[in-house]
Image (cartoon, rainbow, N blue to C red; front, side, top):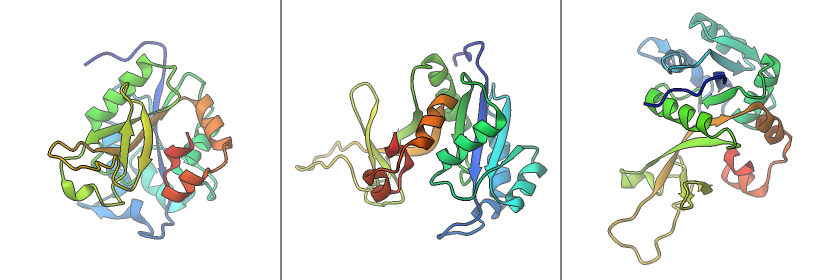
Length: 217
């Protein structure tokens, strides 16, 4: 595994909110006696080279749980459009320098893949010109392809994302045996200048339709 390039700090910020139309209080749901947000924090702390693990939230109950697991807590506004917008505010409140790599790990990922996050960090630090990075993997379960809960992505030949959708993409018109689909794993990397730009952008029609913040980028 490659070493982290010198001179740049990396922080993980976990956006978490209590209110949810599908599962209110999800970050506090107990998994083997530990709240979900605690599970995410514990795994985030295993990622090598990370100087700070913080939770960005607008809820004191989540803040209290995060503090119990020794995460830094940043209280943010309740009206953010997405987790990335919440992280943009948190990064500003934390006073992060423009060359600090910010990793967004979702508050509902108790099985946070430590090795994959490490690979994302190393790749982004090696390419600081990237405005935003994220993780994908090839779908092996055919049931996930039509399921809108599983976000699919199509790529160009260089590995750059062309589009994300809850629908099956690409559409293989003629079918076939070797049909490749990629699933998006909602973990992102960015630097503070991009976060400021992102949070200033309006919500576009595709982001609004798919309810996918990455389509704003």
